[in-house]
Image 1 (cartoon, rainbow, N blue to C red):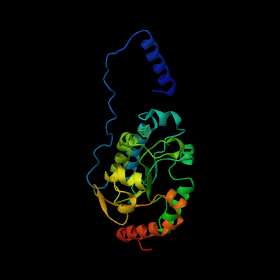
Image 2 (cartoon, rainbow, N blue to C red):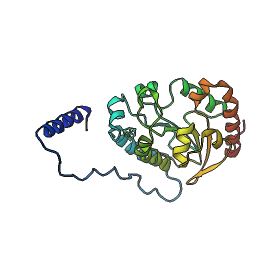
Image 3 (tube, rainbow, N blue to C red):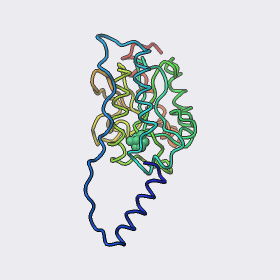
Image 4 (cartoon, protein in one colour):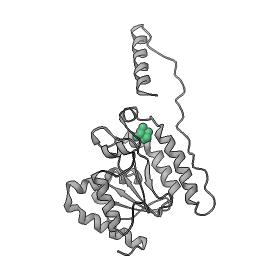
Length: 235
Ligand code: SF4
């Protein structure tokens, strides 16, 4: 439903209410889009096959209006970027203003810092896959609500299913808690290994936190050294 049709519906309901109509027949709720990731062939699927599967999900996200307020306010949905065959995925929280305009995750100041962190690990953005829990920008860069995370969860879970990384690095509390289904704070999740399906998961601070607290860069670097050692990447 568009923002305009949403307002039209509201006006129609108000006019029915003023005419004394207090109840409406219940219609069947629209089904959520079903999973479209085809069962992948035996063994590791090809990168082009994964790219095609991601494009199908990207198109669904672009049309998604499950969070009507976010859908009305967004300039672009922000899906994901990088290699569909990446060994390592970085999972962030939600798009900010720069990402909303560009449609690309992690391109603002925090994104530039993430790029530096990736490069310090001797990797490039093209070698990893970067995505967020939420695909639409929350107004004023507020934290995503639990309801929004629940509505958008299907998309990042399916992206991870397609890319099938060996390692996932959660950036910040929202990403870590959403992926790991926990309420533990990021400070207690750091420095430990978790499992998500076949992927090994590590959690660290979000780059935007580092912009506000530069002293925490040392902790993030410790986490990256742990991650690179387990990946077999020599620093
Ligand atoms: S945040 Fe996710 S679930 Fe909500 S409207 Fe955007 S794409 Fe849909």
